[in-house]
Amino acid sequence: MDCKNVKKSLIPLLENELPGERRVEIENHLKSCPDCSRLLEEFRLLWDTVEHREKVQSSPHFWIRLKQRVIEYEEGRRPVWGWFGELVGWARPAFAVAALLVCVFLGYSLGNFPQSANGQTGYQVDERTVALEQLFDSYNLDPSIGLPSGSIEATYLDMISGE
Image 1 (cartoon, rainbow, N blue to C red):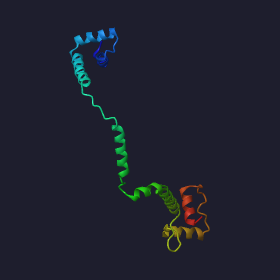
Image 2: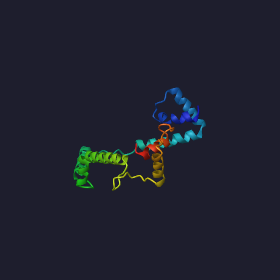
Image 3: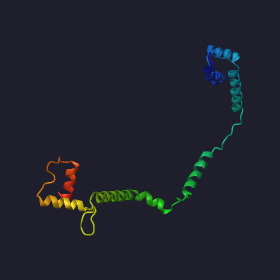
C-alpha cells in the first residue's frame, strides 16, 4: 500500500470506521513507514486535544438577545449621506431617464453639421474648391461623369456641389 492512500485513511482509522482487512493493511504500512506513523501520532494528539477540551455552554437566551441587539444597532444607524441616501433610492429612475435624454440630444446634435452665425455649415470651403466649381460651371461640365457611384471622388463632388 502507498503512503498517499494511507494518509487518506488515517482519520477513518482514528474513528474506527475502517473494515478489518483494510485496517490491517494500514497498520502493516504504518509499521514500515516512519513518515505515516509520525503523521498518525500528530493526528492522535490533535484528536485527543479536541475530544478533551472543555465544552462551553451558552445561556439559553443567548441567540435571542444577540438578534435583538443586532436589530437595535441597525435601527440606530444613520446613513453617512443623510437625506441623500434616501433621495438616491427613489430618484434613481429619474436620473437614468435624464441621462438617456442627454445622450439622445447629444447624439442628434453631433449627427448634424454645426451651423455658424451666418447660417453656413461648419465645414470650410477652400479657394481650390471654389475654383473647381467655377470651372465646371463655366464649361457646363458634370464632374460626376465617369465616376462610379459611391466612390470617394463622386461623394466628395456631391458634397461640394450641395447635392
